Structures are given as C-alpha cells and as structure tokens.
Length: 79
Image (cartoon, rainbow, N blue to C red):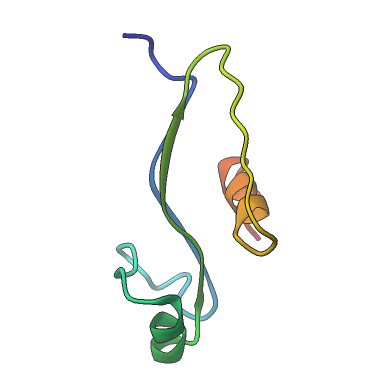
C-alpha cells in the first residue's frame, strides 16, 4: 500500500469565543444549535481525506462551504 502524501483525519475549525477553549471536537449538533449555545461558528466539520503521491486532489463546493478555511488549516494559516 502506498503511503499518502497528505493524510487528514477529523479536522475541525471553530471561529469565535470557544475557539481556544475547546479541548475536543464539537459535537455533531447542528451548526445553528452550536452557534446558539457557544456564540461560535463551525467552519470545518470533521474532514478526513488522503492524497496519494502524484494524485490530483480538488477541493470544490458552494460559496461559504469552508473550502478556503480548509486550505488555510492545511497550510497553518488559520488566523
């Protein structure tokens, strides 16, 4: 089996007051319920993927779906 060049498991990104305090990933509650409870927004929710050497990997989705935030997390530019 070929080792992936990039492997991501269970990536979460939260913006807001709870961002620094969350020790574990947020629950799978709805985004609206999480926002009402914490005044924070889940920008990326439980993303996992692998990219094999030489493989072309595309991130695509609707506007506001978290594509740029995902890439910023991967490059550690999350501020």
